[in-house]
Length: 229
Image (spheres, helix red, strand yellow):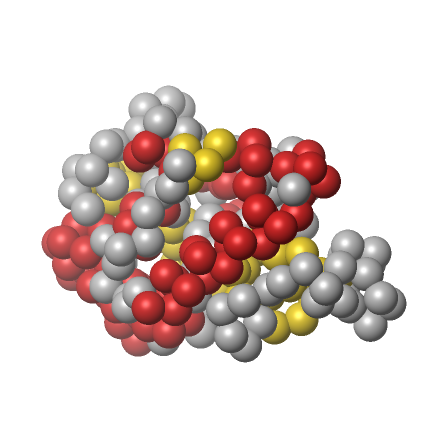
């Protein structure tokens, strides 16, 4: 089977009711990004950060996958599909995707502040002060914050280099390093972007843009992709 690599962003989750900070002047539900999504914000006020992600986690658990997620799952009948997502929710997995790389971490995991290799599932929706790892250190959300390295980026690049078809859904390709993945895709590989606001991508060959939201755009594109399988 050919390899289809799908890069997804906040737009596909937004259709399921999960808000994006870029739609609110750089604010996440009234909070500055620097206060709730950076190591410095964590150092200043870990209780605020934990509460912020608790609320996001609760909302994400209530959200449901949409047709954009479901069409990506249907494509597994025709391709070996690897989803590389900038999103920290689990909507791709709940829709049925079997290979998902979370570039920015997961809302549903915590990790040790003493040893980043100690990662634990969060079964409910709360992570609180006093929740400790096995080494006795406070647990933090297993989220890649601004200013931190993206540990799974090299893995994503390897998939992009092997892609027979490359698809971008729900992202305007402005958040790096994820936005740079398209530049690793082979020159003659068919590439598609589905987003209401198509990005300005220069020097990219074989690129088709569909100016639409994820759910309806993926339905429009489905047959065209199957014909490439």
